Image (cartoon, rainbow, N blue to C red):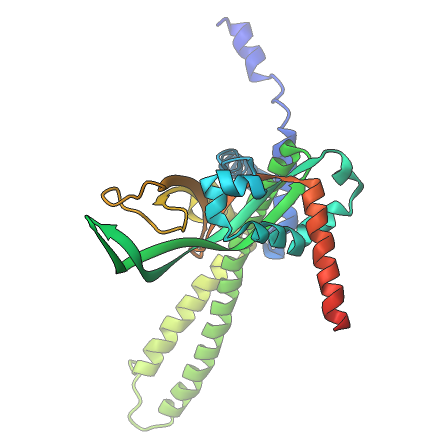
Length: 329
């Protein structure tokens, strides 16, 4: 490269920032604890970290399975949908009680398409039982079994446009990261108040010790008070806005510690009984799904689903009628 080309490259205007990252940065500033917003030069310290976290959230949403059809037909044909719901009526019950679905159906844009998309989340559960099973030529009715089932089925971010659904879920994932970091700040605040209380108690005990004739500066109360005071200084340093910004940047560069997606597989029969390769029954099938894992170790099955608007409206209307009858009774 010639000297003049190198000079032109040096003084070339930087590329404009990605609008998606700019929007994500604005969201981070809006959601984060006010202590962080008090720090100077936020964009300088956080922009690259926000870009990394946004890319991570995009990768997670892109890796979600689906969209899977959720209806009576898929209940009979799709092993995963069959495992997610005990009966086809449970699908209608989930749609009818979903506040997100009710709000969506009241919007004008819900009429754009005959189907809509959403994120389906559910909690994986297992229970032990004794049941019938064939062992060789003998059928026994006291065989220990593990049954897989799901609870707390919830629909999130319904929308007629799949692209918009994914975009909203990316925002949700980023917001989840910010909530986790805000919880970290709140814990620091609680630790500070606890330390202040402990220091007050130790101070009172120390004054009592000083009133005694044989008090020594090396007394255990004095040493403990020094330790508590040092911890309070360290806590105060962590809560300084400029240090919180650095902590947030480090956290956003390693978002997998607070949010990640894990693939899960099971071999089950139509009753949800978990099968082993050696004893798998003829109707046993493999189901594959993904689970969101958060910092507090909560896990939720997560999949994109496709739902008929007419069926959702019918379920919501039925739930309303049921509530009206219950109130009248």
